[in-house]
Image (cartoon, rainbow, N blue to C red; front, top):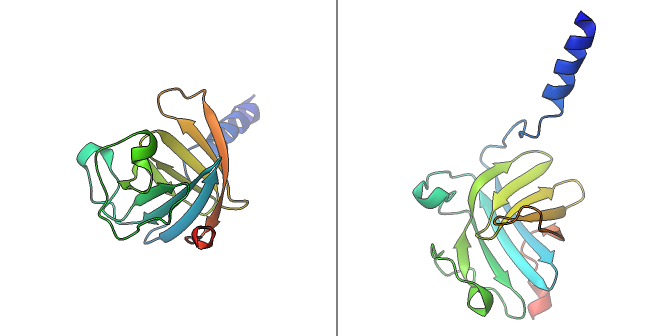
Length: 147
């Protein structure tokens, strides 16, 4: 009985969804294709923002469909929806974690999980967790498709 209890505790602890280790001093750029949209995501480990659960000054994303993204603009705090949201740099929100095998972060409308082994991503809508979208990511800002 004692061995069975220890086995049960081990399984619960090892199957936990909490990230095991966060990679310090990371700087990761991603291009993610989700449906007809491209997301250019910059992940940096400079966690100093606390206003509205934003991650940092250097953790941002730009969504684009048909135009070359402008990476030089300052990130915006206010959310917009629809066509006005295209090609606007926005801050990433919390939860935020970078581990050896997964990336976790949030945009205004979705919580993202990116598998670093196969670069597949799953997005959970923040207002309705049952609404799920999938996509594919690549390392680096892939901007050739806009030239």
